[in-house]
Image 1 (cartoon, rainbow, N blue to C red):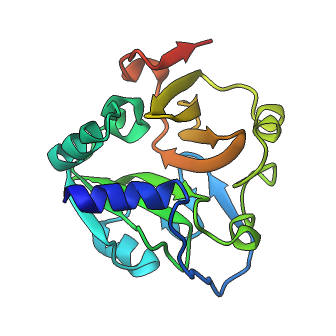
Image 2: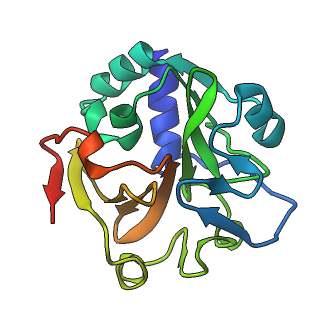
Length: 205
């Protein structure tokens, strides 16, 4: 399991490449708090897997906490861990329908969708947009100009790797930036900022 998790992190950071060649080049709208295309929050595992295929890694909450902690990363710096989930399914080799990295479920209901620009073809991932304003792989300034009203910034590092996440609780959206590029977008159920407890990584505006 530890090997698999390290392998998946390597994929996440763009250290391994895969010949993922999606066939559909339509523009897909990322709807904060709702989903992307046919992949919607509240779907069951069976419904979600019919859309994006079977995952390579399956973990329950406890296993995910241990594996993230073993990589010297605080699990609660990740939005999904703060929201809570029963199981997480990771696509280390990507999906041909949507740029999915992980799907998080609670009581067989999809509660968080993690989309990733890592290791997907640039021409394809740029078809996924928030309000026709922000696309995967955009510069961070495009994000800040288009969606300036974030609730908080989460700054943290994993070894020598530094991330910055902009969180929009009321919209059900978080955007991870790596090397000043929008690299991951997480969609979750809309929630009040006060429903989540503060962690050391949060910088409130």
